[in-house]
Image 1: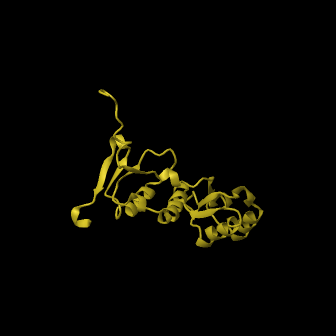
Image 2: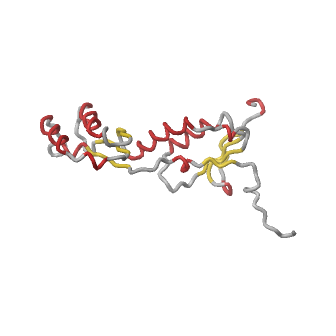
Image 3: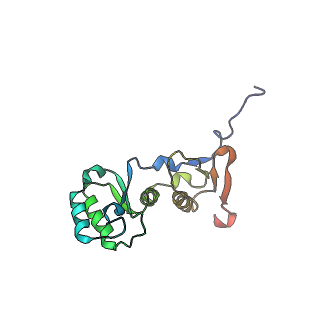
Length: 172
């Protein structure tokens, strides 16, 4: 039929790799060590240990937890480790840093386990514009796993993708 609108993207061999498909569901919580420091700056070991002992750790049940200190206090390494010891029976995963560091660590675990063979010798678009907080590091890692297999890699949406990589004849 003349004038019919054809969706060339849907009919193409283009494969979409969407990092949101692998985003782990779960609460992300940040635990600030400063709350247990004297005036937010000084760690008094006896007081610190007592406050940790009396803290309600059940609130972190099945959560992804980032441990950090929001002040410029010089906190000994063992302090974060001790907080981690208290969190371990409850939290799904604990990292040092921010909620973005949680997602970075999770994608570092997940992306190596994916089967990338469906993308072999095909043009691949790494979907951008995610609604979930997918860290930039996940996009970088995905590109590293896709590059040895894909015919080409683009980033964005099919209607406005940015070319990133194209396999040359010599690399076949």
